[in-house]
Length: 258
Image (cartoon, rainbow, N blue to C red; front, side):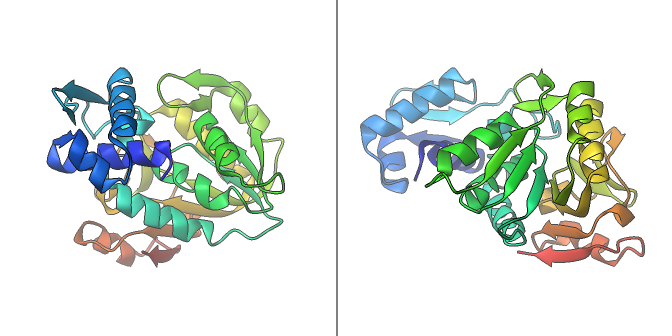
């Protein structure tokens, strides 16, 4: 397990249990106590958790309704589901493909699954780009192109007019997108700059794939991302929260369940 994977696993555990001590974490994540203490210190320094005597507790200052929370925090929500969704999405991609990926907490999980495929990836996420480069075993893995643009605080996302203009220089077979919410009108996000970049990605891609765990369904954010009819695939997990939307007349996309 890499450091990043441990951090995400620790945050996921805290989200569920609220507290974790060094000894338990060492056993759960098969790491030495010294390694776990460094992980706890890193998470505390990033304001993602609070240190206690001999352990760490859940940070309570953020709410999950804001889709522009720091990425590391969002990754702790429904982590197992997001990982399965990302793995299934990555199976669509074959060597030689050109792929665009926006910077969401679920699309971020695709990085490890794509890193060693012989593909080209265009992304507006410096975190995804870094993770792919980190996980590549050999130079023949994925080539990564960053869009440039303005760095949105605490998200690792490059947005704004420059990012959107650069996206339109490229053509891709696949677009993999995330969203903050889904309702009868389609997917939406809370930030206009993020949505504008996602819409540019849609305009330059042949096949549009939305990655969304069940917690996103039945909600609406401020900015509409696209129509249901713009989507070719929706990859999600089976749950009562999203079952209703499988049967909407305007959902023409193929629903892939994990």
